[in-house]
Image 1 (spheres, helix red, strand yellow):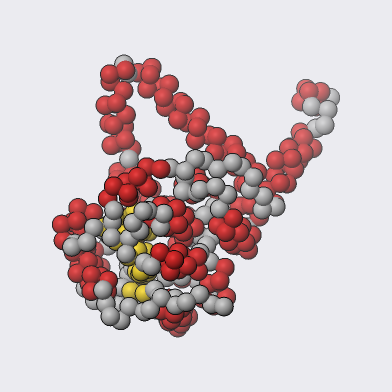
Image 2 (cartoon, helix red, strand yellow):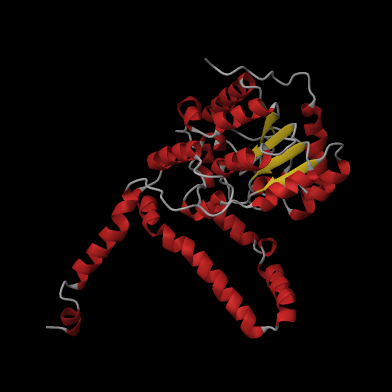
Length: 350
């Protein structure tokens, strides 16, 4: 008998199978019982101090396009720019509900940057790897958020993704361990007076601004190409998305929601984008739905001023073009804020 067999009378294959069952079986069910991280009050505090009249919200499509300094100079209204790279509508709903709408003076306008069919894809960028960011925007149990997300994930996630829920506690704890290791290393290599400067230098070197390739990898890895999926129908998915509750919040606050569809980088040499009939039908239905609920769709897709010269190798705008893009964007967007054509806010359906 081998030494391994003597030490493990069950046999390694059987032992591994038992371990997988113990840790993995609970994940096959949509069970989320972990206590959430504490709500992060810092962004809400900044909004209270700024008291913006207009808030811009989105993922890196917002972050790579709008330069806050430029916007502050050219805008005649106070604006707050809230980019959450690698986020989706699940996080946007939480930010709108718990950070923006909860302000003593809610903004008059909210502009949400999105791509293609993203607004009716609640599970997009809402898996376990994004859970920490979402928990920091949660106040309490968030039953409606949980209901929408659990249903969407159950319908869209493969069993391998659900299996990772079993080790979510370990994944989340690993972030705390990493922080502890960083702190101990810093104490070992720097005196108390030196630690702040060492930490700042490390953040400059390893910060997100110096890791653009990582941003592109994140986008590719999480299926950005599926945002225009031909099988994703608007009518079949809108009521199970975060779009209705976001529109409800706007109606309750008396604020205006503008959904800004960014122009994606063309994959061909043609300056005029070519969209499928399916995509065109989706955008028509989205526009009509938003208009019926007091919101507005502004679509940049066919804007001839947004040329290929603005882009990196993906849908992000180059850093040196953020200022010019911001000026171009705001000049056009400002006309919509007080437009007489802005749809009236519809009364809630009976």
